[in-house]
Length: 394
Image 1: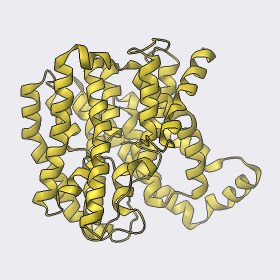
Image 2: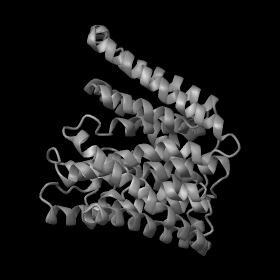
Image 3: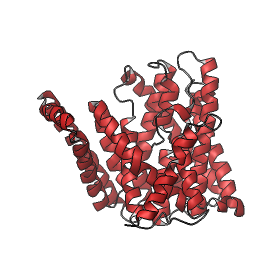
């Protein structure tokens, strides 16, 4: 273990909260972490190799925890969400249908020819960013609930789709692994519900809290690593393990104590390492030295906005809702990380993907301001003061 490199990465990650709390330049915490990684990595000073071990291994754990936390942000227990789920699902399906022809246009005008990944990048949203924008200040209703359902379903679909789209010659094995992870997550949900009915965990948790044992966190990490082991054994990604476990916690109701512990171990250590090492692997310089990458950035961002605004207009939600729904960070970060690791994506293309995602958050902020003026059923919010995400995900 190179503790000097680890200390440097942890120190660099502090730029995230610094920028997030600066009055003049408020940004989601992930922006500062990516910028710090870019500064000390491949693009900048080259002090850190984001693909070297054990930093890459710690980043992989951070990736799994990021997806877990993103899964817990899904509004699966929100009042009235079930009634809005059907219309939200329709909007999510429409987003994928609109994304297909737009992806073909992006492919025609850029050097990025991975059509499946383009569809995911164009159709995805980040529920961890969009949900607080639409529901800050109290439960949303009407258009807000449908938009939340739309974003949540698109989030889940794209996360599940990433391993399948990125699989090359072993698609059947990846599908089997993904199904097995989801099945094990469903079994885990049943077991947790049964234990809750019998107060099995609560009795032990009271003693654990009294002595500071972190029992729920230990059990959650055990479940995460078992699911990650199953996923990687079948050639799929740890993101499906983390996200499915996060959905289980969202369904059963994440205890406040566990939420604080996950923030501590995840947001406080592992997740920043993931984003700093991701930034270290990007080649932002290639955005300006290679015009093709810059064109890819502009066309991709335009496509993301176009898909979500078109869906919002077709479903009569208004273009500001479309701008808000276009916010994303988790899925593009996951695609960039996995693509850089397996060679599907070049560092310059990864920089374009991540930069377009960051820009989408800024556009969502503008859409939220317009939404606050035109629709009193939902409230506006600056994404920079929402939950730690995008950290995440997704």
